[in-house]
Length: 291
Image (cartoon, helix red, strand yellow):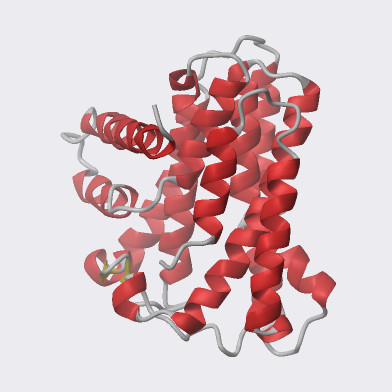
């Protein structure tokens, strides 16, 4: 199986898995809430976090499907974060992935609650994972909370909001983006290793890989906000011009160099894994993307 075939298999499986999870509660009174959740959760996307969880599970020694509860949970947390990011009180975006944003369709109240429910349901789903070492479940749930909460993604978003009235240092920009984007990527990679029963060295390697990939991915994202069109991206572009982005800090030429450097750093961190070809190819494809 080549790399693209493996990606297609991972994406198809996670789409089906997520759809099945909510099909079981479609007839409940909260139907409108479920529709709003599915609108964002099943509305497209690269499924990067799921693919990372699946692959790290596979190369850590188990069937990649064993990571499905964790893979789905990370996609649910990601979907919740996008719903909340688009709200008028945050980025006030009207489009996401080429469609009206959640609050434009369902209203701000339902959109906010849909995000809340996705976050909470993510922990419910993750708790159903069966791990080779049962003691790792507490570690896994703690890791999810750390990557998504005040120490991770949410904390990074707060720092970003507080920083918008001044120009940040390089260290501050790196700190914000390693939390905002890198937090969930780190969670997906490390949860995959735990699902696969990997070693401590593999867990540390997965975290280092995620740190490098997260920064490379975010720098490329900042570049695309300048270089791409709304039609290409499916969302508003040029909205980050006044924010503390990597492009504002370094300029496009230096950003291109940093994308390559952080991608190489990520790939070098895969040394504890015997079969890392897919992850290396995935990292390169993500950081060379045009959309």
